[in-house]
Image (tube, rainbow, N blue to C red):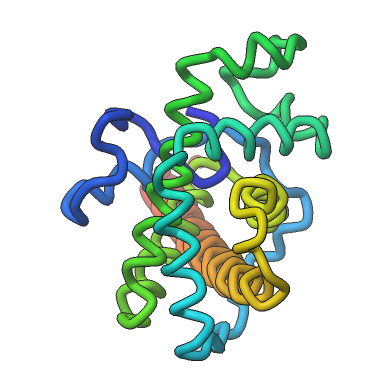
Amino acid sequence: MGCAVSGPDVNPDSALSEEKRSPSVEGALDLKTDPECKGDEEPKEPFLLSEVQKELIRASWVILHKDIARVGVIVFIRLFETHPECKDAFFLFRDIDDFQQLKMSKELQAHGLRVMSFIEKSVGRLDQTDKLEHLAFELGRSHCRYQAPPKYYEYIGVQFIQAVRPILKEDWTPEVEEAWENLFQYLAATMRRGFYTEEKVKAGQSLLSRNARVESTPDRI
């Protein structure tokens, strides 16, 4: 539990395997509720990546895939360094102050692989926008069920980009960066839409439940 874009029960040796294992990106989270949630569904985010940008993402991912475990750890460490308030929201890591200890944590490595699994599945769906939208939308819904606020979604994309720059070196160009930024913008917006959609569903269910209890309560004389 406790990852902004991840789920439980992921085998680190197979976290980046075939699509039938997609539940690994939909599991329980343990983040605090976003006080800014309004419960209104956002408009659908347009998918604006060009064919050239898709190829840039795919080509850079081939390189990054060779070092995914390290990238995942770096993303989380940078997240905690740049947004220390996030650390308190992650159940497994809130009491660990030593970043060196965090880097060696098996749980952190597993969380990092879950993030990479979601990113890999997204890259694999660049030509299947319906499936890509469904993946991100459902992940946003699960974040709502486990009270993971939308404001955390953008953080992961920013830290991913910061983490992979030195790994790709001369292969990291302004064009590559813009392509990844566009992808993460789309994913974060679609997740937000899923979050608020699920929030409205939960609010409706809660209202129905309250009404049912009122109707089933016998009148007192």
